[in-house]
Image (cartoon, rainbow, N blue to C red; front, side):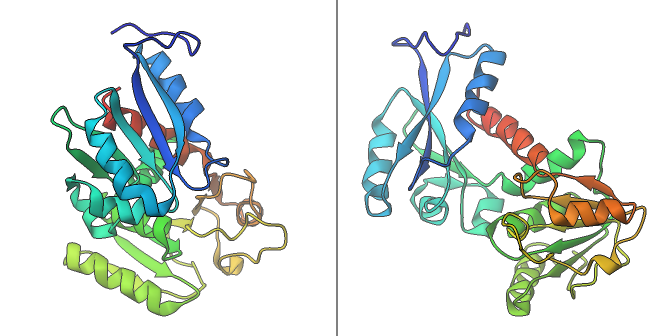
Length: 268
């Protein structure tokens, strides 16, 4: 299949979507469209705003839309779409959510969750391997949970989970152990000392005046401190880590690598 620019959509162009409600904030379509052009694929991603109460009916229509190859699923549809799909990956099943779907030739919808593997791939794109490392992760929400499972799958030595609500961290710890009984995982405090990689998996740092997600006194030279936040590029945590002599890793590589993984999932 030959590629094209975005001004030459034809009857043969394959359609991809991003599903959200609201939709105005999404940033993925330009990235996916650029990948389609680079990979010489005749496909285009467009935004689809679908209200939660209409998602089931909309998914039925997608099964019959022969020019539809797949889509990104984001807030508030990740959990609901996991239950609608005909098949989901094991990691999506563990999360109870999907962030990508693909339409097969027979109309079945297949889902996966690429948030966590995208983050790990983002580290890898900058030469950072997590294998055999002791990792401290702040957060127990959707993004942090996906990252936690991906880290365990990537053979880290130990995972420490910290969260403002310790019960949520313990629940995530228990879910990881149910999936990987041999995983070394524990619930920690705000102190990240003694770890090789420190990750902020929360939204703390996006807004001016946000408190740090952890106690920066525990940071030390030699640590790698990573963010999921993309804006600002240098969060207060990364600034504090830089002052401590840590190597810092911003959130943008996660998005870049996740888009590549998503494009491959769509068979671009």
